[in-house]
Image (cartoon, rainbow, N blue to C red; front, side, top):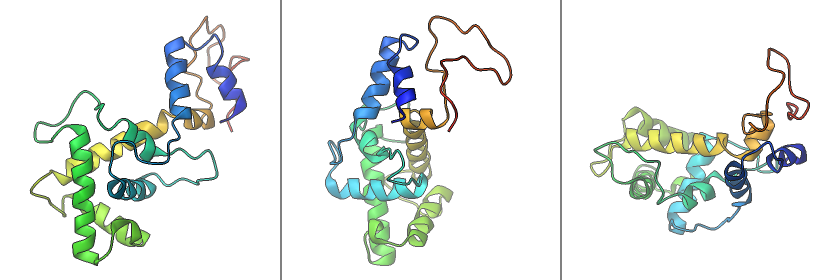
Length: 187
């Protein structure tokens, strides 16, 4: 992580609980699945690489590991026709893998990007349907969860020079094109 942003996180300008959450996100680098079976985790990694492509050497955020660690937490709401978040996540991954096997005779993760994108596009548009699960809503939930994890990660916040995590003790200069002396610089 950017050291100037880490210094901001660790400063008195950031509330204790906010600091704890951000540092937990930064330090959650468990590469192996914690609550999702390995075969489903491999599919999740491949799906997320297509939805939010990232360069693994440039402040890599393991969205799959973070999503896996939150699998049973849920976000406090769900569609009435959907199972709980953790159940829906795994079921959707299994159904996507089954569709890849049926249509292409290969695992989803082994398909080329075009093949993966085609299947994901069909799920997103409702062209690929599953009797067990609303595929469009599953995709919507997965994408929203992935975007939330990515955008709320300290590496992403640092790359945007987002200083909204700091609110203590005051913001003396507020205006267009003005920044506090302590605010991180945009990279």
